[in-house]
Structures are given as structure tokens and as C-alpha cells.
Image 1 (cartoon, rainbow, N blue to C red):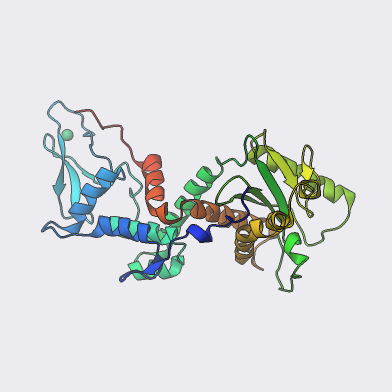
Image 2: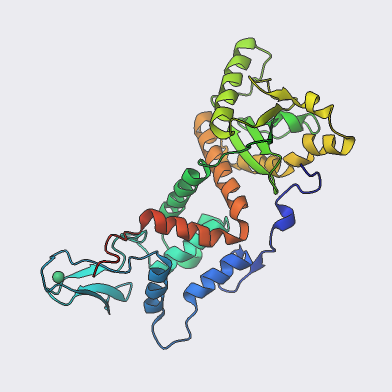
Length: 346
Ligand SMILES: [Zn+2]
């Protein structure tokens, strides 16, 4: 544990505004986007894009003719279609969209627009603003955002905290901040969020779990506490590597196999105590605060909880990849959607 290296802010790159984009971009994300759309050749951009996306793995590099006759041979050709390129069989003449077997298949926008909306998602840009700016239907942009959320939640859920000789801290939001600054906002429901932090990781790795079936009445009722304890134990079992030391903060019930923060403090100096009780949570608390915008009067608490959870899980993934996120997301999209079954097969 090192008390001087806490949050992601220290390694975050400065975002810059780029002409032609309605949101700021991290330099790495912006550079990759430019590499896709830059065109100093005399070929059409759509043609260059297809080449680059094939090289990246976002479009299949080869395609098998559906007629599957002996003299079938499919090639890329320019065409009067939205993508300006399509697969054409020189044997039987059959044509197929260039997007077949990819993320872009049947999306009702151009490939360029899809790349722009994916960039917008990576920069956590407002969907409505981005959709309008790039001239894409909000419905289609929402579909892309949803697909990316889904991919990222799946990836983030594979993540484990802790390990040999690791300490994983547990604390409860908002209880841990209410003590310092009582909550005065008029929120329809305040979700409690279990925060886990891996102290061995720099920057700190977190896990944030919205407590299910939560209500504002946080009582000293024993049966409520028992339910909460079981839920916390289940999260810890799923998320924390078994050989780690789990340390519960002052606002988390002591769960099986865990130590309390007071026990840990006996071995720490004052600086380390301050770090472990306050500073280590700073980034997690700010995400929890931001997740409250997922709450609304029109949704039931459970639906809000699910929306808040999705926000938090994707936010943790965004933090992990920071400036490399656009590349990372496109790699995930390629791995999940691109049909490579015709490759290495001439
Ligand atoms: Zn054919």
C-alpha cells in the first residue's frame, strides 16, 4: 500500500476539444479516430475506411459466396450503396453488403457514423447531442450505446479484486460520507452502494455494487442487517479472490472471514489511517454521487438501481482504460461481432 498514489486523476490525460466533434476527446482516442477518417489519397473515404476496418478486424477480410459454386470468387468492389463498397461474386454475380458478419450489419447509419457514436460513448458524451451532431437517429445511437454497455458490463464482471497478500477494503456509500456532510438533496430514493477497493493496485481498483431492494429506511433492525450482510458476503465471494484479506469499514457489517478497519488501524500510522478511511475512496465516492443522476421519480427503485449499477460498472471500465478506451472498445466489438470464419481459406 502506498499512501501517495490513490486515484486515477494523477494519470489521466488532458482532454482536448477537436474541430468537428461536439465533445472533448482524450488524445489517444482522438488520434485513433483520426487514423480512421484521415484521407490524403484520391480514393473515397468510404473505401479507405473499409480497408482500415478490415485491417483492424472490425469487418471480415474475406467472404464466401452464398451460392458456393466451384467458380465462385468474392471480391470487394465499389458500388452505388451507402458504404460505396460491397462484396461481389465474380463467378455467379451475387452481391452482399460489405458489413455482413460485423457489428455494423443492419445498423441504420453509415459506418462512419457508427464509428463516431462509438467514440462519443467512449468519451461519455451526451447521446442526444452526439446523435444530432452526426445526423444519426437517436434510436440508432441508443442501440449502439446499449450494445457497448452490454459488452463492457460483461468484461468488467470478469474482473476480480485482491489476491495473495492483498488487502481489500469495504465501505458503504452514502453512509460513509453522510457522517462528514449529511445528505440534504431531495432524492426520490438513495441507493446504498457497497464499495470495494483493492489497496495493492495502483491506481486503486474498485468494485461498486448497488445494494438490492434498498429503501430509505435504514434501520437498526436485525433482520434487515442480516439480509444486507448476506448480500455483501455474496458480492465479496464473487468479486474478491479467496486468499485476500477483506477489511470492513465502519459502515459495513462485519462479514464472515473479514477484519474490521479498527483492527487494521492498530498497525498503521496516522497518515495511512487517513488514507485508508478517506482518500482511497475519493474516486469511488465521486462515481457513486454521479450515479445518482440515474435515479428518477418516474422509475421504481429497483429499475433505478439497475440503471445506477450499469452506470457504475461502465464507469469503472472507462477508468481502467482511460485514454486507450476507443481502441479497447473497438477490439472488444471486433472480437464479439466480426465473423472471421472465411479467413485463411482461399
Ligand atoms: Zn458466387
